[in-house]
Length: 265
Image (cartoon, rainbow, N blue to C red; front, side, top):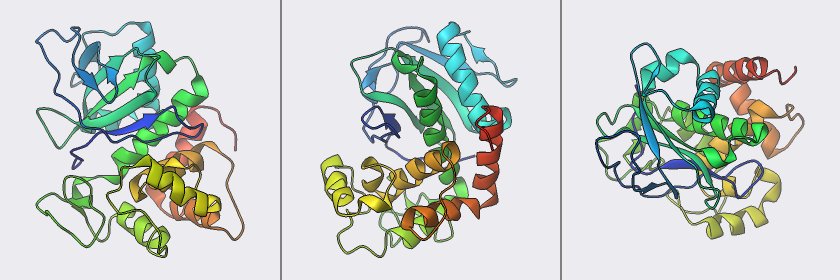
């Protein structure tokens, strides 16, 4: 069970490692799960599927949509998906630079809807990076991680409340963001602001979008931690990798995903 952001947490094509785009969304329309719906996360949703108690999708997706879903389940594990995800939405828009996003379920804000842009489904590495990025958002926003009753806070603002002081994402923000005197605001969504910050501290981030805010830095860095060789030595990036390596949930996820997708030792 997970507390939810009120904004979409997404993944854009703009960078090789990945970009998280936060954008407002409309609710799905119509009763037919296959009917077109309003644009969510910068690509139009063309089909929506509900997760059944046994982990299947209803109705059954076509081959490409099923393949992306199967990879998402491999990344997040069947047990996590059954517990935390209710809905799978797809679009097919090569003109959009949004690859995927997660958003709170329309009917149950303690669980997730996952959406994927199938236009980019045939690039295995990009798809896997996208899925791991989204999984990082899911892992870092548990019920115990967010105070949804708060409207202002001294910790990071999630869009739906304040991060708990002992949450993994809050500790990450304190460890890696508090020392800058030129960091973007904690709720920054402006990619130009993030890009300028990145330009001043390029060695500290895995991508320029990671410099947008602490949550995207968390997700971007975790995806790189999972998919790339470990970084050692004395640097901010090495310290960020060590941060994840010292958390059993994240370190275990790295080893499991690398084994599942045959990424080597």
